[in-house]
Amino acid sequence: MRKLWLVALLFLVVACGGTSSTSASPEQPEGSPSGAGVDRPSRPPVQSPGTATGAPSGTPSPVTPAGPTLNPHTVPWESATPADDGRSLDVVWWSGVEPCNVLDRVEVTETAREVTVTLYEGQDRRSPDAVCIAIAVLKTTKVHLKAPLGGRKVVDGAK
Image (tube, rainbow, N blue to C red):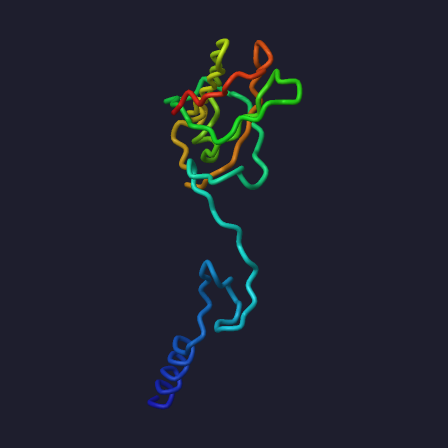
């Protein structure tokens, strides 16, 4: 009986001990060897919402206003690019995932000098108790203007 316990203990030490790890880390995928000299693919830098240093990277997901939503609030946008004819803008912003972050509406105020674009987001009213992961998603929507943009300045109504 003593030998049986000794074998069981030895098996337990071998199974639990050792220097190899099977847990994954952000820099080391699960099952990959550890140590220096391992080639890892480079990752693009992550840009936080509202801190972009240039044009947003990646391809934005196109969305259309779905309102009315629950608890709508203004959301700042990153860029507004006029279409070739100047009669619309492609507005790009960082947001969260649906159904927690849904484009409610876009308000546009046009004057002779500027165009103010204000985005509103809220939670989908069909999913009031939804729980969503906290991850940034690049989104875009097309905003139609009453008159061509011309030399007017485009202003973010949420800032």
